[in-house]
Length: 84
Image 1: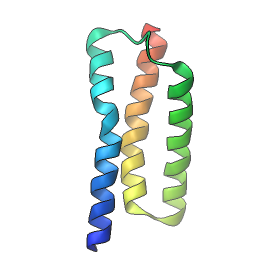
Image 2: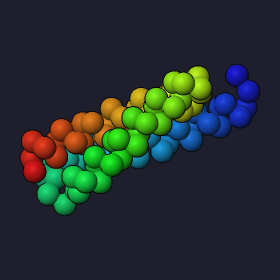
Image 3: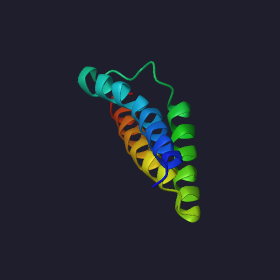
Image 4: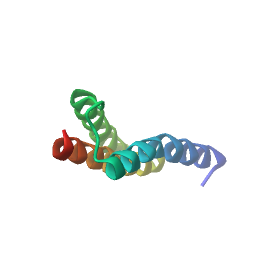
């Protein structure tokens, strides 16, 4: 892999993992009232589209980042549905 791919993977990891602190906080507190359901749905839908796009063009950083981000967004969405 080239250094460009490594930069892409690092960027993918950091931006995807930005969801992680929010997921942990929501999981621990069971409080999601202040998180917008529409925002989560829009973000989740966009991430799924990016994942499909990455798969179609076989772009490893796009695929890797969006697998992580879709997973975390889905967890946050489920927590939002469960805890309102």
